[in-house]
Length: 62
Image 1 (cartoon, rainbow, N blue to C red):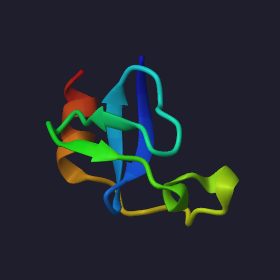
Image 2 (image 1 turned 180 degrees about the horizontal axis):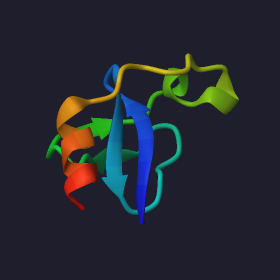
Image 3 (image 1 turned 90 degrees about the vertical axis):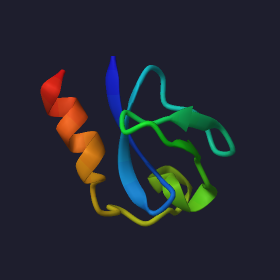
Image 4 (image 1 turned 120 degrees about the vertical axis):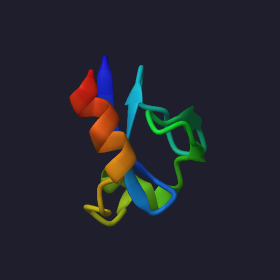
């Protein structure tokens, strides 16, 4: 299942479960990123970072 998660200063898409703070995932655009505390809105993170254009394209293609 596809999801969106903030990490590395952008809102990235991933296929699979959203990791917790400190977890890593491979984005649909092919980057490996780590979820920081500031990426999780429930932990006081900022909302919303800009959407990754490459992830958005990959999401739409699926």
